[in-house]
Amino acid sequence: MLSEQVKQKINAELAHCVTKQSVAIDALNIVQRHQGWVSDEGLREVARMLEMTPVELDAVATFYSFIFRKPVGRHVILVCDSISCWVMGHNPLLVYLKTNFGIRFGETTEDKRFTLLPVSCLGACERAPAMMVNDDLYGPVTPEMMEKILKKYV
Amino acid sequence: MDKPLTKNIRPGQEPLSLKEYEKAGGYQSVRKALAMSPQDVQNIVKASNLRGRGGAGFPTGAKWSFVPMGKDAPRPKYLVVNADEMEPGTFKDRILLEGDPHQIIEGVITSAYAIEAEQAFIFIRWAYKLAARRLEAAVAEAYEHNYLGKNILGSGFNLDLRIHVSAGRYICGEETALLNALEGKRATPRAKPPFPQVCGLFGKPTIVNNAETIANIPHIVNNGPEWFKSLSTSPDGGTKLYGVSGRVKKPGAWELPMGVTVRELLENHAGGMQDGYTFRGLLPGGASTDFLVAEHLDVKMDFDSVMKAGSRMGTGTMIVLDNRTCPVGFVHNLEVFFRRESCGWCTPCREGLPWIEKLLRAIENGEGEPGDIELLAQQCKLLGPGNTYCALAPGAVEPLQSAIKYFREDFEKHIRDKNCPWTKAQTG
Image 1: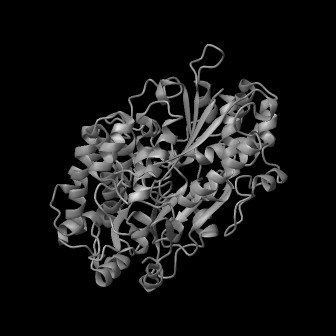
Image 2: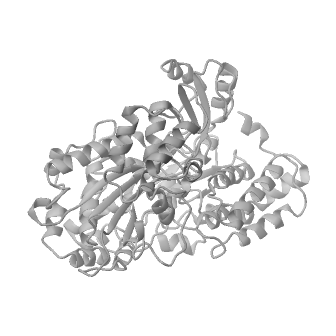
Image 3: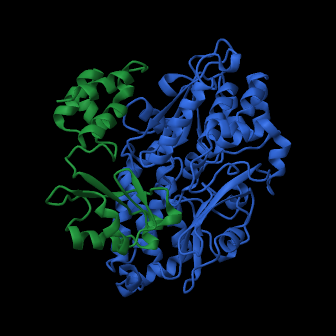
């Protein structure tokens, strides 16, 4: 069930759109902001508001890396695995996360605290290796820094 | 003023507010442009030899000239800033977007006026959270001070500017794919022709320009084409935000005259290789460019010079390959990226990139077979320009074809010896 707040925000976008479909990505971003991911139910409601079929909207949703169509943890860790971060050594960060939280790319901790995902070049190459946790960018990151960084995210 | 793009940027501090930006000379180009005809503004930009900073280097004035003008032109026309920077190794637009948002907005207004556009978008990538926040704040200030909205500074020119945050995919940086994303669709590229200038967003005339390109417009209009050309040591005008990443002493970005050499960037600005590492090669302009090696160190980093050396300047942010990093692993990492980011629309890219990635993985793991290098070389031709819908696949094979050319012996060693000579260095 989409909350009133979410529906209002989507309607605000619809108010100045050229076509209803053109709001699709903004609408999905809004749902994701509030619920952490986009469920089938949420998708169907947004599709109704945009006068699209659920399949049409899902085709859009599944194209984009940051529309999550599966539940994620309270916090999403994105470790950049593109070239400069690979050269500078992003693997130790992954080893730290596997050792201390038991998660690899695509996995969520048992307590639903963290989901770990790869991310393509974050545009922080001069501070490689880089990662984001939710909206926050960190770099350069060493395994020694990970404990202090992740402590903030309960 | 030899560093127009970065003069207002104060690392670690908040960007200039609108009032501070005006005091530093900001928004003058808007006043100047509004007192001329749109065509006159276009002529200034054309005469300056500004070439697109997104990677392709297409002359900006020429791009704008294809937009139909005058009262019979289709409307509304659109100006879109491509702030979807996601080319691996590239981090220059982030610096401009975070550091001086009003410079981008001023560039938007002046450029939109030049092509008679009434609607503008800044298409910014998902990951650039800080930049999006700062741009939103700056846009709000610009509306408050009548630089945006109806009847800008009493001129009769109207312009609405919205910020669209992408939901994340590299291909959104391809201009026609970007337009599809703005229309709420899957970001697959469109066939060209028709070109966006004639039939773009919602079928209307649209210009898509890179953020760094747009940032140059206010300075060109303020100071004129001759000034802009005088900043560079090449036929291409202006300064360029160059960058270096990899095992160098001082990775970073610097605004310099267009045409500095590879060596100057690598040794003078990036401080040379870290102790214990030696130089083997670099990609001059992001992941989708061909390797340059030691014999190219004195090549000038401008579009034509790098092309003559067999590569592309692309985004001008260099990625360095050092002697302790496996070239096969390096190229494999790049092809993992390109394969992941392929939109899937056309066959050579959709089928060819996974095949390339699989071959490279095998070679890297010591499971390569004789004939694999020839197969990879053949794929480079099959995924080349003209065979695909967009430039992703042709870009993807640039580092591969040049790695085969310059580091063939390393590839052959993996196949012959059935292991990676650099394995120990990787697992650290």
